[in-house]
Image (cartoon, rainbow, N blue to C red; front, side, top):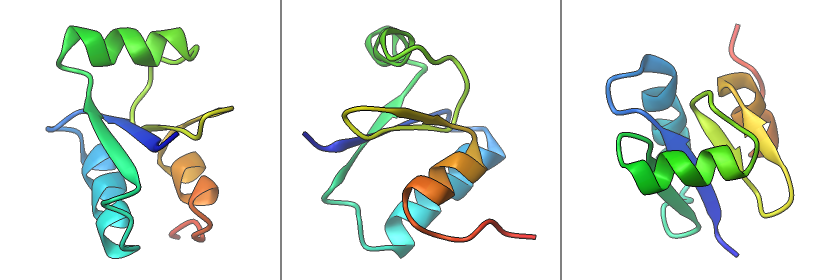
Length: 78
């Protein structure tokens, strides 16, 4: 299963998460899920989430930019 990044287009933390995915060369491995679409918002909720950005790794939901960074193995920015 591919990783899924739940995001909002106009949200700064979501933009940072999308940039991180691109910078890490993971665009082929991560499916972007814009929660402006009902089906993507419902999928996020089905994983127990509501905040964005959030990364679903197939077993666990990582909510918030710091959690997404940690799940992708990158350090938190200060």
